[in-house]
Image (cartoon, rainbow, N blue to C red; front, top):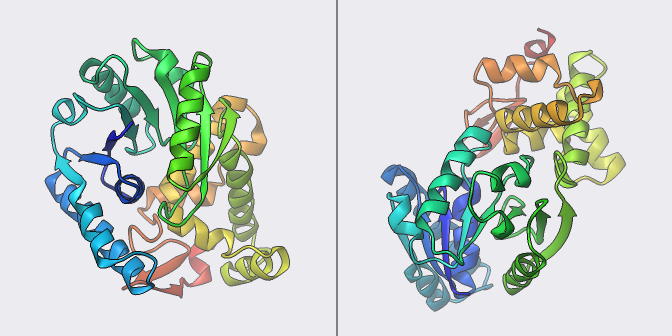
Length: 296
């Protein structure tokens, strides 16, 4: 298996394309926006330059990696000769179902269709296709070129053969695949998102401020960054979407998203991507947002 397509040129998509291309795969990066594709390629180039500067790869490795990536704005053309497609579009169930139907119509019969979803049911996505046995989750972690874990989620009808193939592909990328079953949030986000939500509730109730909460978790729990800073990196809108999936899937009040999270997303305070979340982000640096903002 050497012919790969990645759908979505955003943070996760360009990272996935980068890693596949770096390890010798022929990659088609697909997005409806040419501007997004150009931004994705620019990000890949910048990250490769960083690897060269740290002497992890050579300049020749960088050039050959970029040469293995082509960009496409037409999904049908992009997937028509592929052996594996990795969908990395926005975490929206209706959008993903639409994309998978298009992928199923255009990709070769034997092509495996995978999704980088972090919470949406693989079984539900697979049901939108005529090949549910060939649909599987490949949940990469951000930043993809750095993080080792790939959560491999098999749907109700995903075949053993497809699961083992994707486990092996992940190992070929020097990743560590972990197989999990198809339940809301899988493992990573079923544990992580309630913790993030609880940190937001702690702020909302005035128990402590942003820096105080993050410092407790960094110094007391040995987390590399605090949960509120991590929320800014993930995107508050993404966190809210995942919490809603957990809440809908389990019907349990403990998964209800904090009203502060809902209000911030409604107000467009999405974290790094919007320039402001729990911190204010300017040119790659962060400043604490006035705590009074979080008492609403």
